[in-house]
Amino acid sequence: MLDIAEELNRWCEQGRDFAVATVVAVTGSAPRRPGAALAVDTDGTAIGSVSGGCVEGAVYDLCRQALESGASVLERFGYSDEDAFAVGLTCGGDIDVLVTPVRAGDSPSAGPAREVFAAVLAAAAGGGTAAVARIVDGPAELIGRPLHVRPDGSCAGTLGGHPELDRTASAEARALLDAGRTGTVAIGADGSRCGQPLTLFVESSVPPPRMIVFGAIDFAAALARVGSFLGYHVTVCDARPVFATAERFPDADEIVVDWPHRYLDSQDLDSRTVLCVLTHEAKFDVPLLERALRLPVAYVGAMGSRRTHLDRLERLRDAGVTELELTRLRSPIGLDLGARTPEETALSIAAEIVADRRGGTGVPLTGAHTPIHHDGAASVGRIGSVA
Image (tube, rainbow, N blue to C red; front, side, top):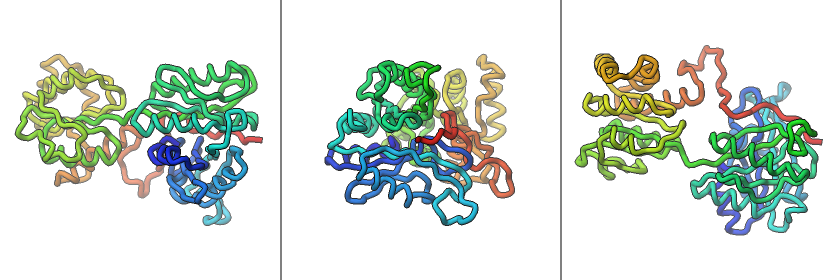
């Protein structure tokens, strides 16, 4: 749901009633991951997607029904062997979809609280940090109710049921929020681990991950464009003010004129950050990489020929970088696509970043027997049916 937060937030501000269908679990090969959503308002306007087209029509109808009934429902869609055009996932996977109505007339006691959804959507649309927890497997009267969990652990709304349920759900949701993850958690209806089992689905909204590109060159301009397209907050950093200008990098969110290693020292980076070193000049590269390879970031890549790479490795060893730390360095940067132009090179770098993030191999899918969609870190297993 939070993947379409900007549009849904506008709907809330406009006072529209709507139903939102959210993918809460995936098994096998499926085109969208948990958290993907399709929403339909009372006029029949639809936004988002849960399957890339396979089951959109059926989910659209469920949303219209939920708007009429006011009841949440969990539905499973799977592969149809008999008819590839029947309601099913022709790609071979199964998805569980939670459909929840968000209506102005609903009260917290009668069903999902609109004001709770509105607060979560406003936070996510503004680029803030927030999580929403909903029960997707358990007593019918509890299905779909939202609990808004803030970064400090405070909550709004209620899941209903046992008084300890909200407290336990909040703790589980905050743990997923801290990791920037979306997924399911099994808890007890009384808030314990041994009570009647419930499945809690938690969606997390965190600020976009960062991509820092060092070196204000034409390759950096192309990479900034691709990085922005992939959803990164892109910073371009270079010590030379004549090159590091907004005019040269219109797709970057931020332009910094500073020595790369000094700028890196000033930043508080997380495990989603990617660092792309395109300067390929020792006076910039070595002090920068010496620091970068010791940071808990997702990716560190450096541009340069194989000869430049070997020289860079020796300089880094002389600077005290260990062999274990050097194994983290992706250099020469990018996948082997035969790239030559800045745009092709940017695609090569982005492909390596995506493969590293998602656990891909980078080999052609044609003739391969590897999964097309690799499971992420979040729980994506099948959940039980709702009675």
